[in-house]
Image 1 (cartoon, rainbow, N blue to C red):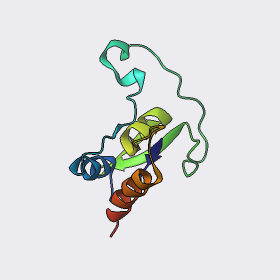
Image 2: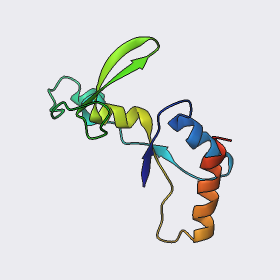
Image 3: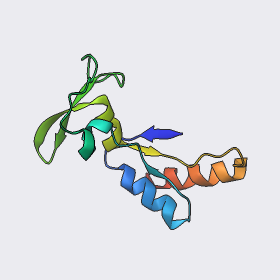
Length: 106
């Protein structure tokens, strides 16, 4: 189970808030073309559509005042977080995780 974020709250904020409560989470998987072993190889990023649609193959982002085009994988990696999920999670566990995450916006 993963989520993407835009705005002031970043994936690291979610991960740190959950970690403070001894709850594991992690970044979205790093795209293979960004890993050192594969960096010299070409990759297919798909097709471009309106960047406002999350299905876009690339997305223009402004990072530190610099415009940068990201592939879908790069955008997900920079804006996503994998949330705790387990077949043994109870409704109480889920409510706790959701409450911690919602608390970031209060």
